[in-house]
Length: 78
Image 1 (cartoon, helix red, strand yellow):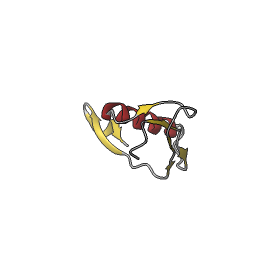
Image 2 (cartoon, rainbow, N blue to C red; image 1 turned 30 degrees about the vertical axis):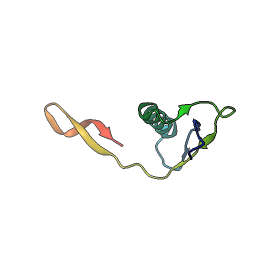
Image 3 (cartoon, rainbow, N blue to C red; image 1 turned 90 degrees about the vertical axis):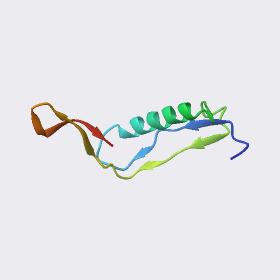
């Protein structure tokens, strides 16, 4: 991929039962690519490569509990 300078990240196909996770995943990938700085994020017409994918499974791990209730979580790592 040494000739790739601009990349288009499409919304992922969602094969899970969680609604709208494909957009969340695409936004997270775009954010990481921005932080990395290797590729310019662009639209499909200007891109040298297009990133597509399918979301097959989501693992949910509690990351922050509700104060006063150890069994209820307020944030999760996906």
